Length: 509
Image: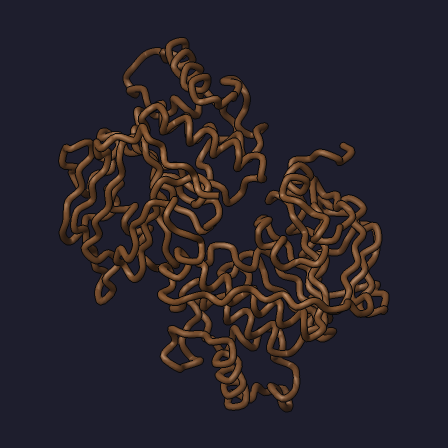
């Protein structure tokens, strides 16, 4: 639902970006960008990976010096290329991943760096009073003496917001603020943002989640290839129009054909260890089983067990009816298990290696890639080129000898898909397969997973994105502190119920 425009929005400009351009060699990252944010307004910034959002934010905070253009904050010129000037002007940023000291209290984290080194005492009483006033005014109920390490992800984000506001920020930039939050925490954050703008603060919101942008913003600005291609009131646009503006063309609607599921391809029975607690699960051929949960609740341990990186302390696994008593990554690859890892750059690919080497992966001993112990480079490169073409990998100038690190995040993910899906696996373990991807790349990955499902593969989709799970999965369970709820049919699942489970309701301690 679109937010109703706030009639009290004034005309005073909090932030004015005029003609900002920035070039890195031959790459024009920002091309004459104009942007305004009014006092008491939430403006969302959308764009594909590489559209210029990060470069623009780095210019605003003084990390980059633009080649041309100027920035005004509350009508005053901002000294560009100076982080100190940006902070003094009232610009503050909350990053996607919180930057707090876990062994310090909330109060200590907030005041850290705000007092001169030569001061002989800390004005903690005044700082506590100021912090509590801010927290009460914005509805951010956080105990000042609580250790940050004891707080939930959502509570830590509130501390980050308080930390920025404590320093006098009047313009707040939020970078993917809902990426690691449960649905109830997202609603709490949005309520906080609305209270903030009602008190005259201004907010720039960077997000990939179109539904959330529609729910909380007043205006939307879309960047494509370094240029502003759309600036519109949120109430007058749609998610379809925004997605088309981001990629430059209409994105086909997701088609999820009904189909009957086949025999069980994966069965876990009472698996424990590495943070998992008696996890039992079945995945059938021709179905997608979704696993929801906030990061850190056992997802990585579950993937490691399924892909041979970890032996469970107890419990067992059955693959296509066969009991596995000892399994390795190489054995599971041979048995048709594909893995789309959460960290495409750290786990999925080796950036310095060529595309053909990354595509080959652990199959270097298989036919027809190996003969008499020697790699058949010509055969490998031919098949790699065919696979990369089939999966529409771009950015390597047609050479499979190019290093993987030259590709964008979306194309790197396509390389992984080309490696894992090209051989028609019977089981696909997809862990956060669209994390950090733009809307076009997300649509492509979703289409490939649905095609694999239609082809009879069983898919375990582990994601923190409920919209993704509700769009793709046939059944959905929730992993909380290592315990997995019984997956239920997608038609019976609701965002509210799943969100409560992600927050721990319904689980025994």
